Image 1 (cartoon, rainbow, N blue to C red):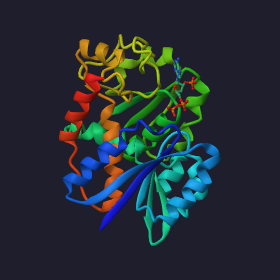
Image 2 (image 1 turned 90 degrees about the vertical axis):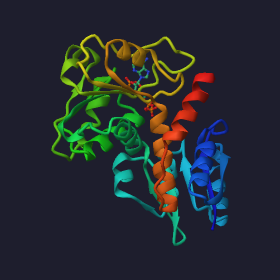
Image 3 (image 1 turned 180 degrees about the vertical axis):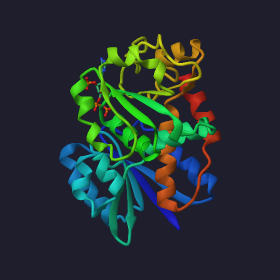
Length: 279
Ligand code: ATR
């Protein structure tokens, strides 16, 4: 079997995905290629139809097409339907099936880094209520957490995510001020906004003054490798989780769907960390 995988997005040229997937192909001794189809919105329909003709075995979808691509798929997995976005497409029996591995990639990164953390006994706070937060919210709810709250600059947008919760977890929408004042109640704090991303490396969306002893503080930003928020969390003695893990594990989950294998990402994470620190 010679696999053909790829990515559609705009922009997409500088994506790390080809490097990550080549690593997984090599690790599993599989043959194949991972190609980037950088596609403007006007060209999306034609690009997808040529990808179907090429019988691409699977592809990833990035900004700005994670919602739009759903119009072109034959089936959508119920979890992706719930999240309202697709980042992974699998060709099965000539049909395109859409999945979402972003939020679950975050959860796997958390579990692989902190394997003794029992999510079902924990309370989490999400900072931000955009597309990334939505996927992570749905994935955390699948883990039957005790509580998952959402704090957002615009509280109404956090409230709009609450209907996704059909689990037994308690869940509330909070203003930043409310969340900062009550931070000591959370075991896991997850920063999902773009605040602190290069070139705005010195920005921090949220104050960690009341962070609980032994809490895990995660940021999904991976450029810079360690955001100011994570530096502050580290100084306060919290356990931290860097953003590159989510990127690697969402790719791992996509690769596993496409190939039916189970990949190991620790070596890749180390190499990725060195690259990000060198950038
Ligand atoms: P993504 O898909 O990457 O999550 P998005 O859907 O545009 O992007 O969501 C961006 C998130 O970052 C939102 O939670 C947004 O807050 P608002 O809903 O109030 O806009 C948050 N965000 C962006 N810039 C911010 C800033 N300067 N301070 C605080 N939050 C910010």
